[in-house]
Length: 264
Image 1: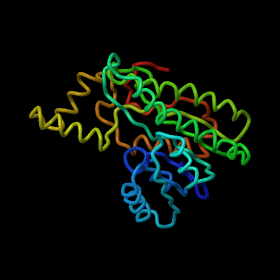
Image 2: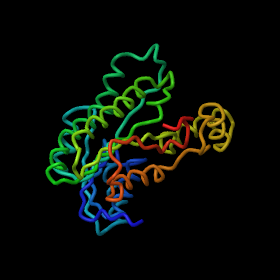
Image 3: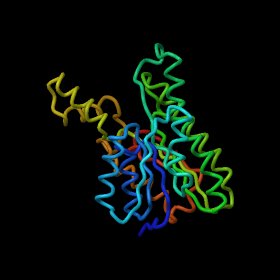
Image 4: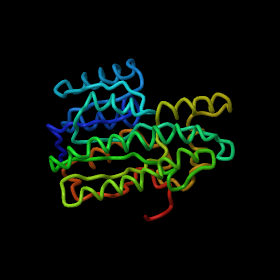
């Protein structure tokens, strides 16, 4: 299967690193021109440099914006007024007991993880429908389906995305536009790597022992039994962005390594 996104314009939020960067990279490899987004000029410029070096024939734009506010969303829209592919990846998490987590954390996480994707969808959907082609991809989490007691606010935002993405998909009936969600599981990133380094240093364990311990005690149901790579998640996003995925719409797709122990 050859995925060809030549001529398509993509916007990927939270893409100066991690899963978002791998999505931008995968879309560019398939032929798309990509707008990336990050919170600082330095991280955006670094990501743009990597992408331009690897794909000199593609067009890349950077949008420095913090999506905690409507103004941040407007900055992304200013950098990319229209797009054919929207990957809503940007998200934050705060780890704290649900019994002590203050209201402010819920407000902040819903602004970033839930409202910013919805605001972008509201802007880009009319153009996609007018052109009769478009792809919207929302990144959710296994936490939406099996939440941890210390990640309740994050889990709530990711669960809200599942229902809202399906609601948005209803507007695409009979068109060439699709809206899908990816449920993402434990994935290797700069954040998880730093956390594991800290645990290894404080406990005297090797990194391999830390990872094995996570899947033994925290996510024993995982079929993958390791942290997924950002590229592995991005591969699914690129497929959902392709013409080949035209019959996949309103779906919840999984890249969570089999942590859920359920069929659906």
